[in-house]
Length: 284
Ligand SMILES: Cc1ncc(COP(=O)(O)O)c(C=O)c1O
Image 1: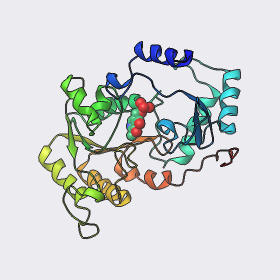
Image 2 (image 1 turned 30 degrees about the vertical axis):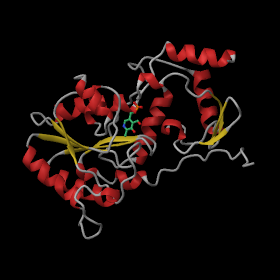
Image 3 (image 1 turned 30 degrees about the horizontal axis):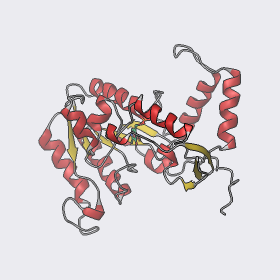
Image 4 (image 1 turned 120 degrees about the horizontal axis):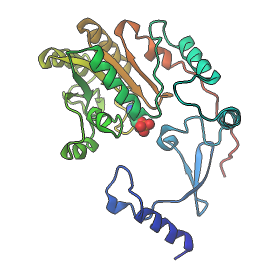
């Protein structure tokens, strides 16, 4: 037993692992390096990082552009309280405004996707009062807190529900999951029934304030025909005056509450350009 493996075990014994049984949090893999699309464990074994860890290193590990930006800001001004403003914040808002449609012009900065969803729920319920229900999808993940878990359709929610740590008022819709269609239909003959069913849900549920959609599903399979699905939702939510919240971890954290007539954001998000990761690592 090496000294390091003892220290890893001790670390695990004194911490809680996330999103798994604590029995499985015994000797997590030690990662010692990462570069470009690869990461390495302590034995030097190389892995292709298909998920950019948790979609947070999408520009590649050790991307020089990202490192330089972090260092530059840390040297200049690492932190000020949110009641003040900094030049970089002004620049960020200007960049967002130049990208989003004119009517999508108000932004809330949060420290995580989960916190964005907490804030969205507060805004949605105040804006749409007295409507309060939110329709989410079964195959979705939206964060780890009470609102994030309430929005989450996948089985991780079950444990939070049992522990009564979710907020109420969230109902789930069938997914646009062509591989195992919940309506046992086949595209295109299905006429995108999954999206059409949402009209029915909104009308029959009543008091629906919003639909929450994760267009590129992170941890629950990539379902298919999302553009058609979203186009339909945009029409329905516009017609029925329901807010639409798009929460997309895979595409540069595009997380917005959309008034439906403003929805060109999905199409514009596809055009996002980001600095490429430097190609320093050569395959063996
Ligand atoms: C769609 C979506 N929403 C919210 C979250 C939660 O984000 P965070 O881990 O930054 O709290 C995730 C994380 O994977 C996500 O994929």
